Length: 407
Image 1 (cartoon, rainbow, N blue to C red):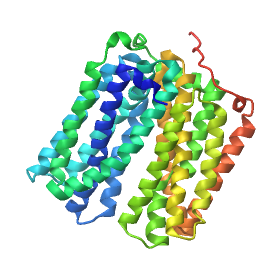
Image 2: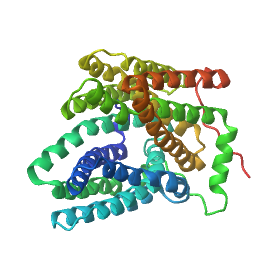
Image 3: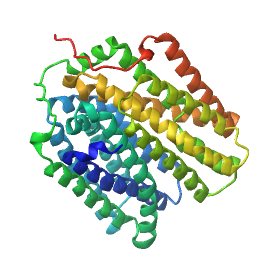
């Protein structure tokens, strides 16, 4: 289960991820709190901030994926850590000095989202350069486990620190946390990386990746399933909040418990995925089907604690699905265009989230929160069945990495 930790470079990477991700969750909590303070509780302002931070993923992630193949991924990540740390530091100093205004938060949120969009493909592709192809699935599973752990630790720590020292110092703590990731990247032994020589600059490199993915039925299947399941099923920021507040009439603490229960299930699913020797398309389909059924079932739960308990297996199935799709996509993509393929994968994921959340929110408003879960889960299940029926030969076995055709 933990075999990637034998690799010194991966230990440095994971340590940096734990510290940095915890800081990022603290930052998200403090940023939301700051926006509410500045606007006297405006939910619309919160939505605008979230949109500004996620919109760059649509605008800049394709460009970032080209950079991931064109330049050394380690260097791209080190530069992005410096820029993100500087942006967070500026927000922290503005808040501590009492000079911050809402437009500052909006502008810095957009800039942070832009840097993340440019560097995210390099971050995902860098995993295989650290551990090699044979351990990609294990490393992705362990990274997902750390993410789910920090998803519980970060907001809790952020809330305690906001109460103790205020939002400004929390931003400063997060700015310092980027140093841990920078140090980890700096201390890596370059001769132990499975790095490929960067591609020379040339025209049409993104179109080349699009053409390659279009001609690969296995990659098309992976990205289609990711798109549909995310759009219809992975909308818990909307559905769990509405179920907690509107259906079960509980407060913010109860919503936090639901989120924590899902994170616990996600941690279990990530560790089990890390233990699996080889990712397989059948695991993707089984996890997607199980997740879809669990989402629909959650809409039928009669009591709050039954609903909360169901989040554990739901989180487990969801993380098994997302981790396995991620691993298979990395293993399927030609090494010479890994960054660009992962950039397209990220674009699909972000588009599905941006489309799915408003759609599920509208269904919840028209038919009620329970119906939005039931409809979303069933739509996700039907989508998986439809993709399988259309691409049955691809679903029969494991995926092998194939080289891109030479032009």
